[in-house]
Image (cartoon, rainbow, N blue to C red; front, side, top):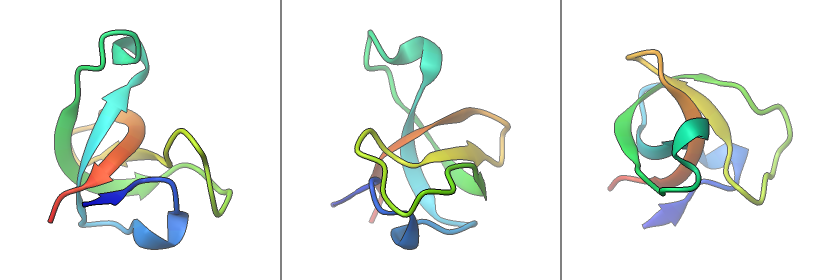
Length: 65
């Protein structure tokens, strides 16, 4: 399992698990397919921010295999 802290590992069409802003305290996660990468930095310690094909926005916790 690859974590979502490196932008180079994430690309559109990739299956990922994210945590949305409102779920950060609870840790509830959402599975989906990446549509857009929103973080411009090459590394982000809390996870790269992405938009899923369904419209949810959150930080990648890990990449599904």
